[in-house]
Amino acid sequence: MSQTVDRALSILPLLAQGPANLEQVADRLGVHKSTALRLLRTLHEHGMVYRQPDQRYRLGARLFALAQEAVENLDVRDIAHPHLAELNEKVGHTVHLAVYEENEVLYIDKVESRYPVRMYSRIGKPVAITVAAVAKLLLADLPEPERRAVAERLDYPQYTARSTPDATAFLAELAKVREQGWATDLGGHEESINCIGAPIRGADGRLVAAMSVSAPNVVVSAEDLLKLLPLVRRTADTISREYSGNAPVRPPQDHKEA
Amino acid sequence: MSQTVDRALSILPLLAQGPANLEQVADRLGVHKSTALRLLRTLHEHGMVYRQPDQRYRLGARLFALAQEAVENLDVRDIAHPHLAELNEKVGHTVHLAVYEENEVLYIDKVESRYPVRMYSRIGKPVAITVAAVAKLLLADLPEPERRAVAERLDYPQYTARSTPDATAFLAELAKVREQGWATDLGGHEESINCIGAPIRGADGRLVAAMSVSAPNVVVSAEDLLKLLPLVRRTADTISREYSGNAPVRPPQDHKEA
DNA sequence: AATGGGCGTTGCAGATGATGCAACAGGAAA
DNA sequence: TTTCCTGTTGCATCATCTGCAACGCCCATT
Image (cartoon, rainbow over all chains, first blue to last red; front, side, top):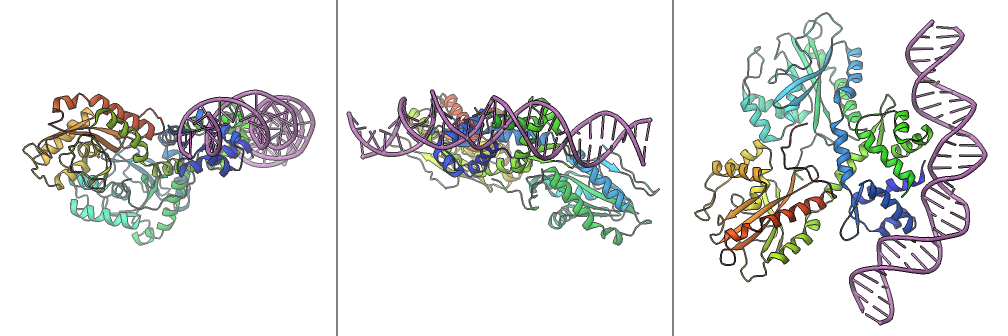
């Protein structure tokens, strides 16, 4: 729409591939050197490009700062809520949203079941970290040493016969969750309640939150609940995509060191 | 220089603070709605902004992708080398550059001492990880659980009487290094060689590399070598700043979870 | 169902501001 | 020194961006 801006913005991906000098930029843009110069100048004033000592241009600090600031001011809840509500609309059961924070997993949003049966959970309350589907998802995303450190530090209360018994079992479960990309809690917290959860990822592929659908046995069997899995995962993916500004969200691969 | 681009770029920091609708953007820019619309459209086409379902604008995925791509295509060596050479020019001693990668610390650049005395080190070769100043710096930056995991997995060869004896001592040393922001190796690897090192940080404050100056006792005493510390640190900071595109490099604080 | 307000969108005419040219400047290499 | 290479500036032209005003859409209100 706006030619000047269009050209200026076209410079950025070009520089992302590596430093370039004025002439290279002008050539690749198909404009006169002087034009490229003025565009680069403007970008420079905004800190979007940086001029190396050798005069070549590179992407500048501002870009990183912006990306970071944007992430910090992003609230998953804002993004997620409409989707959680919609999901709740469709399936009727309780929907949770949770994040990991300082060795705890906290519920940060909840859409109540439309059935009379309610659950023990409250926004802001820590999750039963050794059994909840959302907790498994969030912990499974931690880097290996920390994951283990946390697992070994935890208590393993036997809420029910199906609660995770100890660190070894928990770590095995986390590995499985990590592998399959979703999680369950089948009566591990309250005998009669089942739960399926899916991860919400940021643009860098790391988990920013996890969501789950919970329902008591009396309303729907574990088997039937699992049939909702595709829907839950699709919802989580939609949220991920919106959260990261419609990026093609990265596959759930390892987070390698640079 | 270019008004249109100038305005368009001014939109970004504005959106970084949170989503905004067309009118808000127009107002804050001091332009007509239609103008703002066209600017936003152009930004949108380039993926720099994203339009939420509620029509409000946010920073888009492209921004994150660009920042990331830029980082991936950045080579510390390219940036650092001239500065390392300059430092070597001033002090005469051997200057090293090293990075952490998959449980190892590797030399990736070296400027030889102009004195006849040389050191055992080669680009690409793993560093004596339990004693070298650069290794201490790089490991000190790891998140706590991983730092400990690595420390406990290591061997502690007694190169000299002053080599780090065991994991406990090493972790204590790392804590100190982390605290003070620089590191030394005083005869820990080779009896007669001392070494001072400083960290090189990226825009996010995390270490991307570490550099050091090494000199044998016969040329300069440990005490005199330490007098070079301010110079070494200043050099490292200069490299950090240039590496992150002239950002005000973040203080060496903790890397908290979001 | 009708009305009104809020907000985004479009077409248009005018003028501002971007463009390419050509000439200049400065540094490096020959 | 000369030459070449790359970045920089002044300027005249005209393409492009701008603001306006009118329109359309959706939602909330009566």
